[in-house]
Image (cartoon, rainbow, N blue to C red):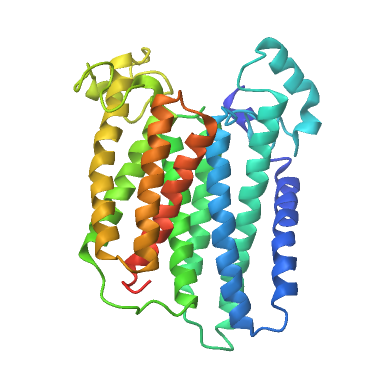
Length: 357
């Protein structure tokens, strides 16, 4: 497909309407459940619901990536100029006949489009949060200022732009990794808002180890995204060694060349296995540091909900990460590993706001 055909905005309105339909279900449920509550309490409930659905969206995004469905519809925002794969029957059939296990199949097209519908639905919810916050602040005092919902709205728009680039730039690893980090950033912003509505922003003294661990977690998520987007998980299928060695042959310069096509170097050559090994092993070594930091946090926050969550999620990440390597990257373990990272972002953002969680 040429550059012009990668962006086909003709189905954009239909896709947005489908996203609004997706958002209408949670909004209707929320209104029925909280129709007698004060407006600010309904807004707090909407924030928490949006956080939950954004977490689900991050998981479904991981599922989309791990099932190789990211190019199931190779244009944006629709599928071959249609709002759903049903309208692209001929094009998908032709692509699937040419490459039966290729990037475009009916199943992959539906997975990709469902992901886009869900993302649009979450965008509608975040827009609703921003508008409702602006409206209510004219009438009542809210614990959340207007700046945070607006920043979240701007962030989700940027996230949508990176979602488009993920498709149109053919899953370039740097773009896909930034898209993953953007999803985690949305979780952090929504967690701060939900926590503020819960009235817990002054819970107690902050623990220094939490801030350090928080920074390390973001670095590790970026490294994990780099592993996944470069398909470097199976470069090491042993633990704790890799390829029968404690220090296998690695090409760091090639592995961490950031701006390049998937599977290629910046010069256009195919990436070497030693580069994939370097990508995997750096993530594994960093995981030891992050696990140690999480253990310290769990100890310092012992007796609190945050401490228990951090300890449990650290064990979860170790188990799912190990399963990815030694069990040939099973889909359930891979999605669960992303889910554990997303949960850690939520819990550590929460813990950053005070100790007595």
